[in-house]
Image 1 (cartoon, rainbow, N blue to C red):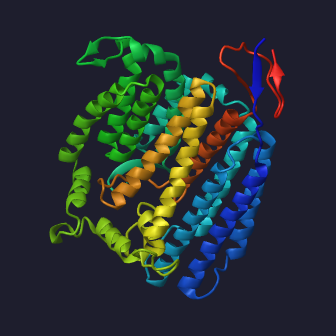
Image 2 (cartoon, rainbow, N blue to C red):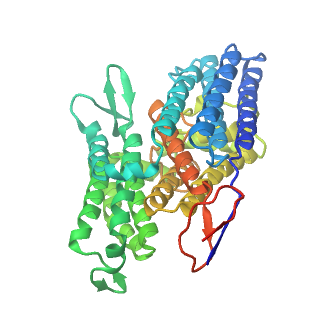
Image 3 (spheres, one colour):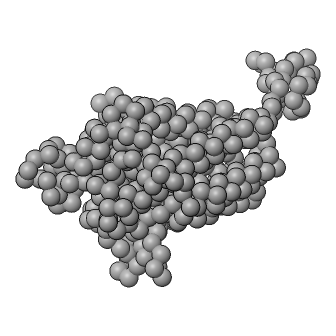
Length: 463
């Protein structure tokens, strides 16, 4: 007879509720400080923002307690705080632009509306998707949908070019960046495909220079993923999105096979097209030039954005100028591409590191769900979504701080933009569902024990 010792699993919904209230208090307090710092009075829409935030967190709390009671209690509070801080920075930039006569299309009210849509989609996902493994049924459908979304901006009528990149579609006056939704579809496809081919990808195929190469039958989807990434790079001149998609696939390959050689193969496949883009495409070449020497008098006109962003980072110092007291109006697209520079200017290096710590904790929770979940599909999906978020943060912050060239990606939950915010809320919902599956009460068997009945929290089961 083998003994199965269970552990006590607690829903921890009270902890989540308290953290959600703390996130709202910090976010709304920051929003109020922007009005006081910019106009010496509270914002006129402070009450609406406060009530809206409280209603949204109440809906989230009820949905999680109902459909995912054992979900990680930290994921949603972090997301809510990041979203509210993003609304705060958008309001700060909008107010500065209105004072100094700069036209601005972004506003806190519009971002709050997108947040409402994102939260409702997150709740709908939690209610309708009871088991994440159902997504595996749509592996190839997700591949087709992701491919269509990724290439949609190339369509002649609805495709829209901005700042040298063709990554937008415009329908009936509404703009959308389909690559944000495509990354979710591709993450589902990669997880479903790799979980069924992980053994052949890890062991089968010839060995060249100490590196296991896959069989041609298994290498086909890899070449297709590479082809889509290159199509985005060549036809849409978007190095960041191309890097994000191909990097997602390569890292998920590494997680599935536990072979470092896949990272080497991925780097070898991506490096030649990246060099071609840097030397032959004017838009990408300009970004490389601005990365190398943005303060040169010869490059001032084309590199104004990054040079002004660097001045903003420098003026922030250690503790920042204060919320509502910076000059983000001097940086083009300060509410979207350069929202990190705006945040660091007003919150200083301390605030910038605290922001990065929030992202790090969110990624760590995704990895924790990936490790704790019992099926390979869920592990790959949670790991892939966590990685793509970490990659976006690195690419955006690295571009603003001149660690790497600018790429045009958006900072998750913080930057202005409806497509990015809504899709990242969907990712948050998937992570909550995956963490619930990873943390649900289940019997832990001693080594050599046979499978037995599941134990309830605090119960010991014998077989």
